[in-house]
Amino acid sequence: MLPTTCNMPDIREECPPLLPTLALINSFFEDPSPEFGQYRKAVVRWIDKAISEYSQAREAILAQIEEQNRTPEEMARTGRQIYMFDFSYAIEHCLMLTRRLLRALERMNSLPEVQIDRTVRKYLQSQSQNLVDARNFAEHIVEMISGGKLPEKGSLFARLSQDHKGVEVGGDVVPFSQLASTLRKFYSIAQHLVDTESGLEDGQKS
Picture 1 (cartoon, rainbow, N blue to C red):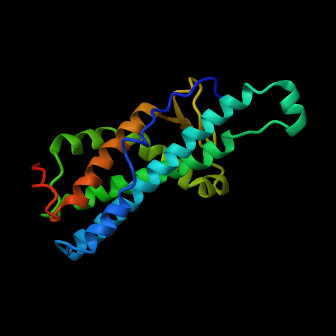
Picture 2: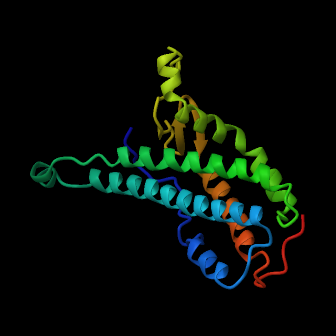
């Protein structure tokens, strides 16, 4: 399915990479605890990459829309380009990374150094089910194929939803607005983890 409009919110400018800041902080401050340090590194890497993949998926949609505006003469010279394959690869990886972040959030709650706002935790928990379902389908395609358990509807691979407002895989749809909001929430968590014990903030209370 080729897009006619881009419904993916642009979050790149408001969520710049955090890994360079974390590397700088680690050169001056010790981790509050070894376990916290490992979680912090993982979460920062995953959210940076998830947002990068999301942004690449968005750029693929914009490129595909622009492609459809090319003149017949231009297409005759160079052929038609299909950027939605790039969209599928990037958005599928974004979903998998978001699932990792959800799992990390569950485990980090037991750490005393991690003080995540209660409303943020509840929001992410409330939004997690269709994200998890879509990721699980994408992750276990081989088992489904070999077991003959193919979906009765939907796509084997991530694709643009029928209304162009989300990503669909295996019949599960994740709206772009939900995915963008979830990534923004995780970015705020990662930013808090970067600042924890660095003297850059007093810390958030749950």
